[in-house]
Length: 164
Image (cartoon, rainbow, N blue to C red; front, side, top):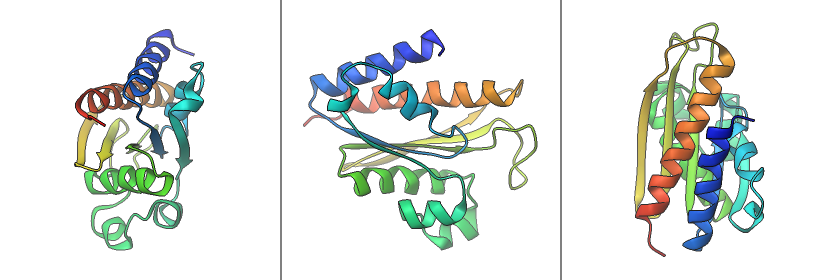
């Protein structure tokens, strides 16, 4: 476990606890890495509701409520899908914040998108935001870890902005 990513997770857990907020995750290319880092932090059970790994379009639709129209029109690797995944994670879990990750981890392109193209999103009752990442491809694991770290940073930023 990378210490810098673990520290971001620990910071996120501390802030969520301090603000009495909960989080749920929806991950594709990171395969549950964001949830794994969060739940590695002692006390995470107070703030972590659930994590869904939705690798296929079918599960993105069934488990998270990503619309078939979004998946057909924009694809699984898109800002629109990331936003709907984050909202679905939050709503399905009854959490305060939903965080999602979808992208191309490599080594091959995904839906014609180059390895390293990743979208992360955060959703709250006030709305959602998405961030596009163009991670310089070195390895599949490097893309996954960088995406997880960025998702945790987005969780921290979102938590700092949410007032309960």
